[in-house]
Image 1 (spheres, one colour):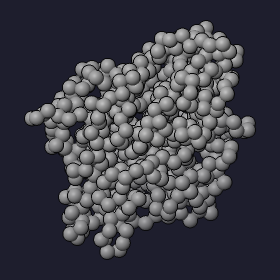
Image 2 (spheres, one colour; image 1 turned 90 degrees about the vertical axis):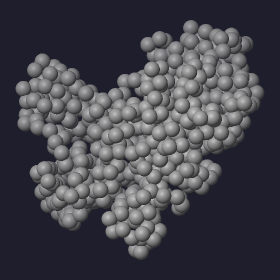
Image 3 (cartoon, helix red, strand yellow; image 1 turned 180 degrees about the vertical axis):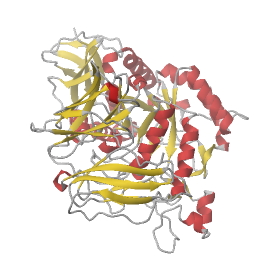
Image 4 (cartoon, one colour; image 1 turned 120 degrees about the vertical axis):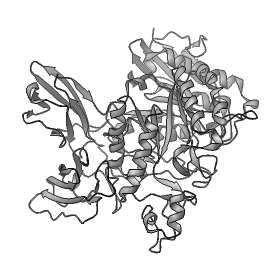
Length: 638
């Protein structure tokens, strides 16, 4: 169906992209405004991709005449003072609402080298923060009841929040009632699944939440991360540097032989940097064929075997999905350079002569796709569908640089195949609106940056609490997932930036704050080179043993996982390089104490009564006045 997707929520002056789904490049698509506030002058041209920038608050109905019929889309527009974004004129990226710190994005061959300014566009979030909403539902007698749970941002003043519900335009529901924070519908009116969107309105409007109700009264929460992510721990492999293959062996075959090592390390999900055909830069992000596994890795047959071997070990596999650009070595870009009118329009250009392709940060070896071209969308959607059948999820590269409605289409496409398929975005700074029907889990670049500043002594260790609060200040709902890490292939190694004394504390933070912990291959042995060959022959075995003990501890204690409660606690220390917090789960309460300084510290824990045996090392760390902390301890409550 070519319907453009879910109800849109925005403010006057913001811009949203409107695009037909499942596009037929040969089809004709016409946009018009069927209904709008009386004073509005909004209108569309003749292009198949349209952009709406409302000029009056209210409710708009947009009409799309498509090859499969006429579709209508509701666009709810709030006053401009509730806006959450500043954007460029040509957008599709509306709803930018998050920034936390600045994270390096240098990618050799793709974007230069070394850490630099973070990716993403600016945002505007008031000091009060952005409200949030979660929808829950249940069957009550012969009705299904959806309840909204709106919240103000952490530490924001109390504010009376309004809630609005909308039935998705693609679904039929003739009978329902809305009263306050409740939406009720008789089961007799629900024949097919119906999607219900809810939004909270206060000083700004919230990221919407969405549920699907069924004829039997069942309710699915469509923005909930897959259930398996509550016990997910990730290992990123820089594919061409992880291990040297033997003579006659492919890289993927060599990686298969290391799966037992990764499993023994205690990590259960593999994220591979791109494995598609590329222009021979070792990072693989400059893709020349979106439908084929790189020959130098071993080809598609060897990739199939790698995925099967991982699955045999109950490990999940994440595919690095690159949709913003192709390599300039891609055959389509070469045709565009030669002036082929078909392929010139596949790319964005910096000049009227179409001689310099548009890129971000002046990256020299890639060219940005033109998402106003239906052929581009069709080509990439078909590639997504091919690889979604092969793996358990996508890590989505430069998600901020691809129109959000396109990600929503990918969300629906993949979730229809497998409701437990994982979508994880790299959006730096992170963007709260990308949680609604786009991504389940988000890179926590804010936490990464703060852990870096703490490790370098530029911020107190208590900055961790502000980092966690900031997720929700910018508007992420409570159910959003976050990937927590201290290294990845875009950043200099933590040990290089902060020293070995801080690595154990930072790694423990990544494994004990709410989130999905990740280790970047080589981190566990003290590797100092960001990319390329990992020097396994010079492994720091003590650090390696520590990571193994840490991951095993994390795996065994449910209170350290995503769903457990998190709170700061009172503690006493002579240095601001120390912090402490508690996690509460079904298996009890645990206290985590972190010390980023170079010396051992005695930390008092106030009223917290703990068993002083550290769960990572098994050592008793009791001391007069508290506990002794060299780098990190995890202590069960007494």
